[in-house]
Length: 248
Image 1: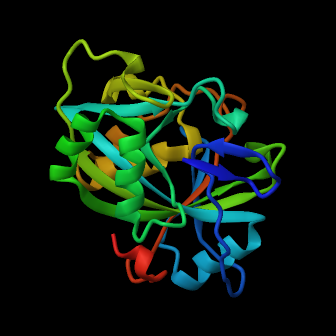
Image 2: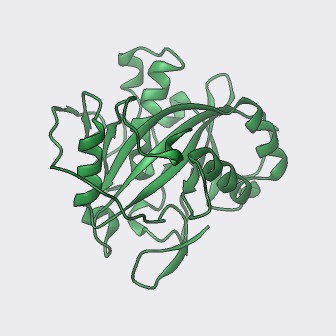
Image 3: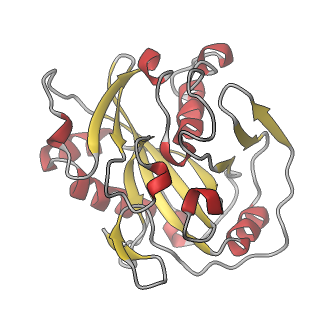
């Protein structure tokens, strides 16, 4: 996927920006997860609040990603590698997927197109058989995350799917970044790009029925903000409606 940051710089990845309408500023009750050093809303963000946050950001857009389960307690991630346009996020784990492009009619269209760009075709054909919508989040990246670009907010449409992979699969089997297969225990040692560990925690609690204490171990051994600068992540109210693209 080739897109632009509005300054004439073309690149691939999670940065296609839309024009967004908004209303008044978002308000929220927040809680600090000290083990992750992140700020997450403890209630769903309403439609008007999401639009306000998008309007306040210098750049905004939409993305669709997937939590890939590859066996009992095993998950597939993409590691952001050298050459990724947002340098602050290099080295972190990311969910496969990417940004909306102008010809995408829905979040599902975006995800499937991106997966065919990132993964072997046979893998995508298989995982599409189990592809299911999970939830929506609003992710806000500060100037520290986006440097030298300005702030960026995007609605993230999250899906789940199952994918069987051979035991000897290589890291370079994917077309972008590198493939990382991680158990839940191994993830406690890993930093995440775009604070996708927040999204993954929600998936573990709701889809895998992990208890809160167990899920809190995710990211516990990650150092501080200096490793991978954090984003602000909010769950979006299920009743919020952002148009036809929203029909996941």
